[in-house]
Amino acid sequence: MQVSMFCAMACEKLRKQDSHCYQALLFILTNPHKEESPRHFESTLVTFQVATSSTLEINRAVLQALQRIFKPSFAYKKAGVILMEIVPDSAVQGSLFDQLDREKHQRLMKVVDKINKKSGYSSVAVATQSLEGIKMNRQHLSPQYTTKWSDIIKVKT
Image (cartoon, rainbow, N blue to C red; front, side, top):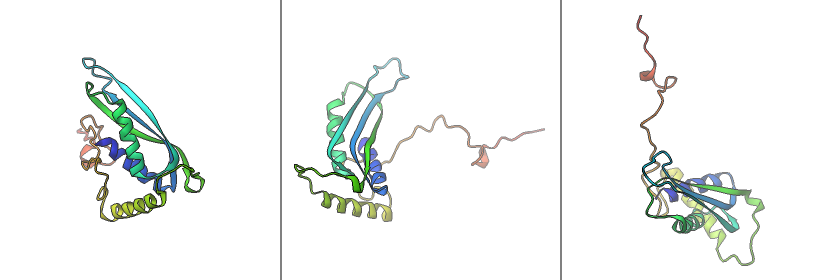
């Protein structure tokens, strides 16, 4: 699932910056250019009691939010996850009622990041994460005049 992959990528970047986030924004939308199909845009904000950078925690919360806003009658074109309310590791404030073993999650995420760095991206991934990577639409690319020899314009005189 692409949403889980977006979560994993964002969380990995968050950990590289030695940061945590308090909120995650999830959005899904249909193709706005297809007039014959119904259009739909939905987003939801997930707030965490304690700031986190754990892929497991953020992914679980985002997927629960996705279940609430997803409607199977629409053909969705795009989805995304935006992490917000980002704070440095030193500014994370705990909660008296927090039941999650945060130290264990931090150690696990360090090991996962280390393995993925050594063995390649997504060697270790969340079960819901797509292993196919991001599928980009490459049909309408502009020529790459400055970086690709075959795209340089040939002038005949």
